[in-house]
Amino acid sequence: MAEDEPLFAERPEWEDVVPLAQYESVKPLAPIFYTSEYKDATDYFRAIVKAGEKSVRVLDLTESIIRKNPAHYSAWQYRYKTLMTLGVPLDEELRLMDELAVKYLKTYQVWHHRRLLVQVTRKPTPELTFIAGCLQVDAKNYHTWSYRQWLLAHFNDQALWASELNFVDGMLDVDVRNNSAWHHRFFVVFQSGVRKGEEDRDEVVRRELTYVKTKISVAPNNLSAWNYLRGVLDNSKTPYSALKAFVTPYCYEAEPDNPSESIVDLEDPLPSPEAQLPCVAAIEFMADIHEGLGGDNLRTAIDLWSSLATTHDTFRKKYWEYRIREAQSRAC
Image 1 (cartoon, rainbow, N blue to C red):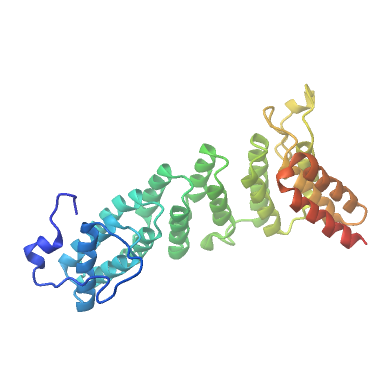
Image 2 (cartoon, one colour; image 1 turned 90 degrees about the vertical axis):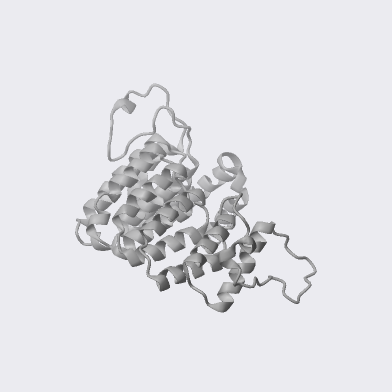
């Protein structure tokens, strides 16, 4: 409802409805003060819910409330029930959702309503394009990524999955630090329903390790990539020690004018010339390698945690001291 539109109490088509106030026969100690427009709309909403009315004018009323408060879950729920009762084509509703989803990207109820609609229309393919547009507005919005993953998993159609890896590649090319995109890549590669069993999983692991190591070489202090690396190793049950040669150069300050750095090694790419070293995530990873090896290697792990606590990552000093105490208790 536009700001210059009359209140529902002033509309002839609503004169048969007696509005129901929120605080009927109650005097709260700390009442919430609403605008007159919002109070008017919600008073009529309570009345039609009580009467059980589901009509075209209810759609107008609920849209008015949602535009004033997009998190009003009762209005969303009743709107959906009304749509289903009336049996109206949902194309117009989806066009409305195209507007509201972009306007209220961070509101869960908007995405939940869209999910309910798509379950009825069973037309998931256009949604991928719509979601991609929303991510241009907010590339890390949780609800948008969550909706995309639900869409892929719910319909689980090969045609939907087909371009998904290319899509997430593009997102990471734009922002290699987009943690949501890294999470989505893991979902696509390792949790993608119909894709499971259709690829050589050993080859997939090799591909993903090469991919993430290349991204780390460009931006070593990107924690999202290191977490992805750990996820690939954990998922494939590959020991962290297998990557010791790759991680080592990231644990120390760069050596100036080293001719060997001009050699490109796709298996173990060196840090880029602009990299800020040593890398905290690499030191932590190396410490985990030595902890996993056990024995005398535990002493090396403790030394690495100590360097983090005292020099490289003092913000988490208490955490590193905890890791040291835990390791020392096991060594006793």
